[in-house]
Length: 101
Image (cartoon, rainbow, N blue to C red):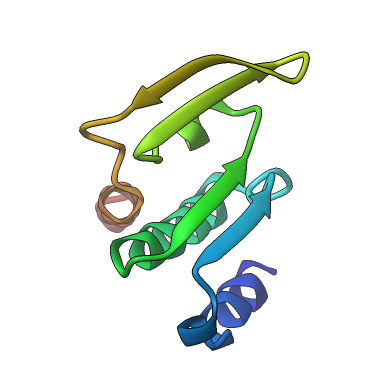
């Protein structure tokens, strides 16, 4: 399933798209597949795309450069993240751990 998601993400013509909306994109995925999706979003963001990702998972949110917390339709927090978690590095560590087993 995640290969299909990544393939779809990779096949979109991003020259025409500047904002991507993602509502719980990792919600039904295992942890490795979720990291793969987040790594793709981070690559797109580094390439100049704006990613608006909605999640209830703080671990997922920590991969973002900005976290906005909403409650009852109001902004409760709005913080810039100077050092977001790196999904690609986490994937690499996960793969290295699996290789040593």
